[in-house]
Length: 206
Image 1 (tube, rainbow, N blue to C red):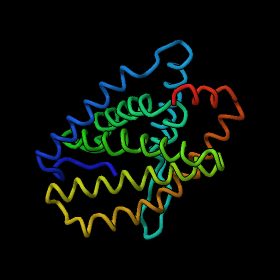
Image 2: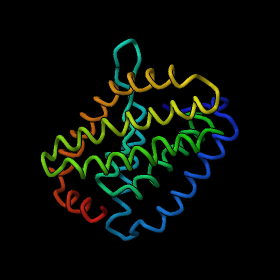
Image 3: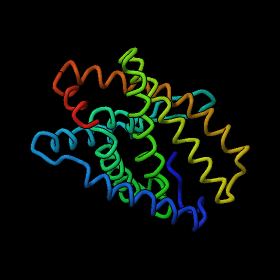
C-alpha cells in the first residue's frame, strides 16, 4: 500500500501532506507524555516497524504485511497511534525507500491516520458485544478503508481510473486484512496476558 514517487499528482500529494501535517500537529497536543506510556509506545512502535518487514502470502501470488494502525490505536488511542505510525513510515522511506518522499503525506494519511481512526471507531462500536471480534473487525476494516482511500488518491491523480483501482485495491486488501485481523488479535491477546495493565492503559487513551 506504500505509494511510490511519481504516482500522485502535485495537487493530491500537497493536499495529503497538509492534512497529515495538520492531524499530526493536533495529535502531539492530545497525547499524554509521561514516564509510564512513552517507553511502552516506543517498544510497540519498534515491534510494528519490525513486523511490517515480514510478509505473508495472499491468494494470486501477492503478499501482505501487518500495518498496525488498529493495533496501536486500541493500545494507545488514535492520536498516539498516528504519531507512532508516522515515525515508522518516515523511517521506512528514508532508510529503505519504502514508498516515496512526494507521496509520504498520502502514505501517512492512509496508514497512519485513517487506519487508526477507523480501527478505534470500529473497535469501540463492537467491543460491547464481543471484545475479540471487535479487535479482528477493526483491524480488517482499517486495512480496507486505507486501501480504498489509496485508490481514490491514485484516481484523482489520473494514474488509474477509480473503477479499476477501487475493486483491485479493496479485493486484495480484504484478503490482506484477514491476516491483519488475526495478527492484531493474537498480539493483543498475548500482550494482555503478559501485562493486564495494558488493557487498562488503552482505556485511558480513548
